[in-house]
Amino acid sequence: MRVLETALPDVKLIELDYFEDFRGTYLESYNREEYQKQGISIDFVQDDFSMSRKHVLRGIHGDTETWKLVSCIEGCFRLVVVNCDTESELFGQWVAFDLSETNARQVLIPPKHGNAHLVLSDRAIFHYKQSTYYNPNGQFTYKWNDPKFNIWWPIDNPILSQRDDLGRRV
Ligand SMILES: Cc1cn([C@H]2C[C@H](O)[C@@H](COP(=O)(O)OP(=O)(O)O[C@H]3O[C@@H](C)C(=O)[C@@H](O)[C@H]3O)O2)c(=O)[nH]c1=O
Image (cartoon, rainbow, N blue to C red; front, top):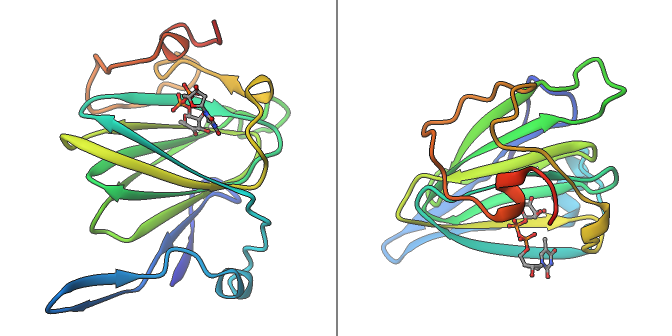
């Protein structure tokens, strides 16, 4: 595996090794010892999956404590990570990645960063490990097209939850 720096400190792009034979492919999506050797010593406590159809956009969500390790299990999606730390000089800066079922990429997202993903295939499965247990009241929400961030998305009419349409919990 290779752990690559990105334009945002602590946001890492991970390229996993995968093995191919006549049956198909195989990859290890997490191995605590290997990640520790690469400087990722996070105690992940929860795994989550969401399945979405084409042009669904979920996010921008985050909180002040949670690390997330995101993978794409099926299909492909555009993942955007935004620095949402109002005390940081990097507040509002964002990076984007395309994750797919074949490119064996993961993205590590630190606390105080928001993330959103837009599904580009007919269907996609978003998976992440997280370092805290689910706490809906601790999460922040920003709108996907918040003018503060000026994020470029490949479409301009995504399918949104009510929360994501309003940019706040209802
Ligand atoms: C996030 C989460 C949701 N749920 C439940 C609550 C709710 O009934 C249902 C759907 O939740 P939401 O509408 O919040 O799902 P969604 O809008 O997909 O929220 C997720 O968006 C992406 C971008 C993230 O990064 C996640 O952390 C999370 O915020 O799932 C859990 O049981 N555990 C969890 O950890």
